[in-house]
Image 1: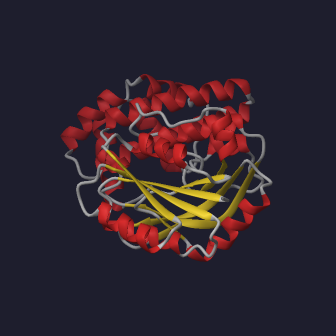
Image 2: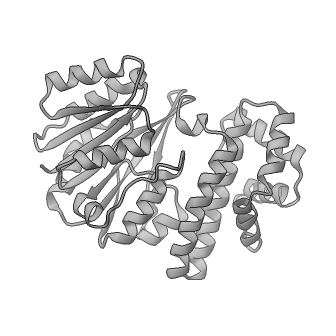
Length: 325
């Protein structure tokens, strides 16, 4: 078996059919699709069974609800492919790119092949996400968000099993970024491809939209500690600056997501608490000498550094309502 596609799903009936159809469109018989039904209470199980009955490449594992990390771990334990390809149930494969995925796996030349992808918004707008030119693993990990996710990548199963790699069940978010960091430190060869192989759906039902600010910052702290340790072992000034720029962007993205549908008084109260979070304080302190660009990033830094809570709340409320990054 060449590729094991692992799809965790919980109450995913809205988008699951489109996701599974995109896997079914794969022209190769040398794949398996493992759907892990995480105790769904909607029509997810019925959709899974239909695909299992119509295509022998599909099988489903049904279990009690225990979260996405445990679901992915169950899929890994059941997989037989040379490579793992994670896919979320609300996303779908760019079916015209299946030959590229298969060809890269068949070469067996790299421990990781990370592909580009498309952001797909509720409005129907699409944004292309690609790796910087001449990207290497350290640059990809520390200065982009493209390795914050486990999906859209070919990962050699032998590396995962040999090093006992699994997803951390205690994290609600950032669990895949931590997993990929662990994987990257265990793997030896990497390829970054700007072929966009899937559509990543950004919508109000996504886990990033459902999880509270405190929980997100707590999970971010785990990722920060791991990346700080990685940076310490692979240090140079440019890499350090890149990491802190990236973490600053993650924090401001969280602030923007949080502000969109909440009242100014609530946003102000929670920003006041968030800004004294140890991870936020560390990132702001280490970012003191950075020359942020464009101008709005310098403005955001000044507002946070100055603890101008009301201005921050109004700023991110407006920015979130406009759908700006």
